[in-house]
Image (cartoon, rainbow, N blue to C red):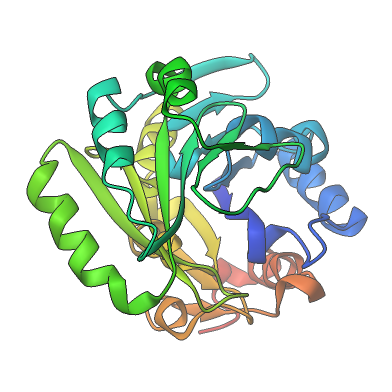
Length: 273
């Protein structure tokens, strides 16, 4: 029986320098040709995810924006694309407190638009906003938001305030395996990685027991709990390792390949048991 293989990107599929090894790409394209469904599930915006995976030539689906977008790579069609209401975007940004927050990222399909009153950061996918009028131009295009804190100690009070004010949104606490800072990811109600994976599984007529999932950060926990075979990277946070059945090597040591080569070739996929 064929399976679905789901991977986070940063700290999981990608090395610390942001690249995917040629060995990993070759192995995943081999599995894809054998009938496995290959899925990326990332907090990155879709355009960034596509470019960072070499135009996703070894991928069937991309789940981006922390689950709010599902994209079929081969047909170039959106399976799902959910936006946050303009009034909610504007209200959340209006709550910006420079004493507790570093910036708020307003994430669209193509770009991270970071609202801040202090620092400026420009890159291929990041545009810094300091003018509320500029926010108005993109408010209808926001898929998810990320609230970056100046200290983790501010998280609980800000999170409680947001949950009380916005019942139609979900708030996910995120921490990368390669950093200590926590942030709050804001998505439309019910839009997370696990729900997006379940939609792809239905399209592919697969049960969750047939899904192998790899992750490293806090926003991977819901999908790792959902999928039948949960694998934490060797560099993953302890909270992530604690919910997984298996732990593989690190992202920099191509832990995904090392696990799949043994697991998929073992009798009844039980080599680790």
